[in-house]
Structure formats: C-alpha cells, structure tokens
Image 1 (cartoon, rainbow, N blue to C red):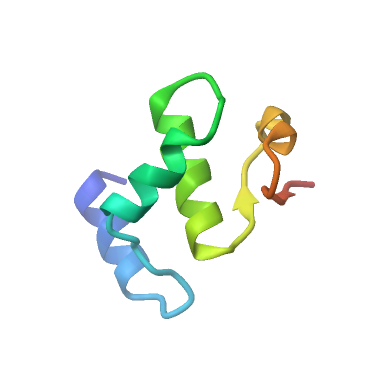
Image 2: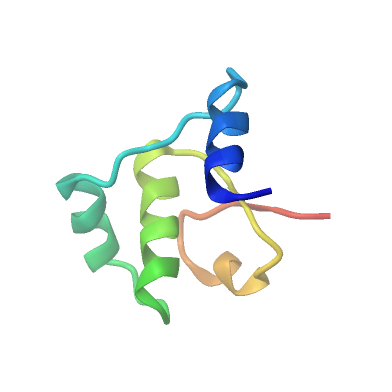
Length: 71
C-alpha cells in the first residue's frame, strides 16, 4: 500500500488520530534523552498525549513516563 492509501485507511477509522507536531511536543522532546530525533518525537508525542506507544523497540521502556505495548 502506498502512503496515500495508508493515510486514507487511517483517516477512515475513528480509533486513530493523526497528531500535529507542535511546539509543546517539541519542548517535551527536548527533555527526552534518547537516540534519534524521530524516536524522541514519537516518545514526546506519546508523553504529551498521555498515551502508550505501540512499538517493538523495548528501549522505549527506558524512558520515564513511557508505557510500551507490544506482545
């Protein structure tokens, strides 16, 4: 599936929300000591929205305040 198809699928399901990157999330990202910028942005978004992260990257569990869901 291409990116446009993926976006269409996500937008058609009410259980998903696409979060805008904002300055509040960037401020949270500045406080997270974790490798790559994209990972810090994912983690910061989860912290800011107070939601768990669905990821197989168990290193995310080392970040205070992050709950990782993966089985």
